[in-house]
Length: 114
Image (cartoon, rainbow, N blue to C red; front, side, top):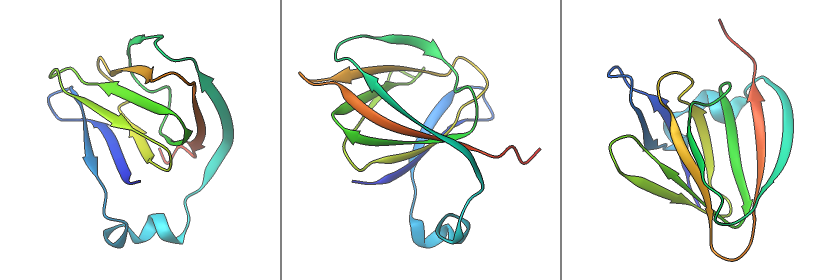
């Protein structure tokens, strides 16, 4: 279980990093959100390259989700993992649920600060 951030780097390529919650006081105080959506992704169905539609947190409730990045790397997220998804520009990432069961997610949209 961990906390992560996906973002578009200065080179226009999506990447990820692990987040230390102790270093993110705004996250522990509260973040303005717009809505929460629950989703079920069937295993083995690839969602091809796409940027995130907005800044949002995606929390894995059950199952496993593999995210692919343009540099060829992948990262598997599982139950309890929370990702701040900010790669809203560029090619984005790929998404596929792994294993034999669907991946259930909670997606929480963030209030646009711009």
